[in-house]
Length: 226
Image 1 (spheres, rainbow, N blue to C red):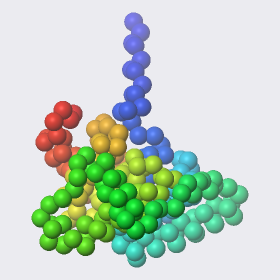
Image 2: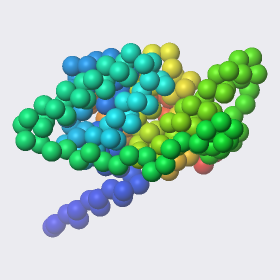
Image 3: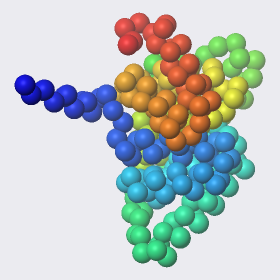
Image 4: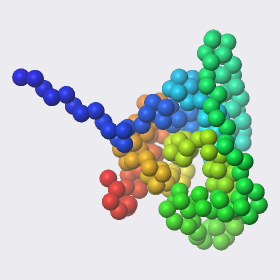
């Protein structure tokens, strides 16, 4: 008697090798673990990430973990790319943004629209009334200057963000919010569960636990989520 082969997972249930590689790059960069970031960068380039895509991830890192860790991570990327070049590996440069970001009021409008689309509703609250400057910075810079750069898709940016926030103790509220945003940009609950396994296998148990807890909390309150 022969057994029937198990059906291959559908694309919506799995992250590609390229997508999986984004997660530890974000996590190691946010943790400041440069030695392990080196390996994650090599794995990411081997998985098909372009040099410019990795640059985008590490530039975006500063919005979550600060300029020092972003700069250190970018310096490590430079070393990795040069080392690979010396070994005869020619990594694809990738594309640059197709347009410059808007300026002034147009930047605020674009960032507000991006934030609303990502979050699923306009973002407001007492914290932003208390400190309106941070609201402006989020809208104009993170969701404007950064998310308007279209050479890295939003799903990839969210995978990077989840990796970063998972590595940062005390950012559980923001991590849960980005689980919701990740679903809003088309990632599935199955893919986010896989992300927690990637963290467990390639980063550490604490990061995986934080990500798994944030996902579980969101799914417990999200209508129709599985």
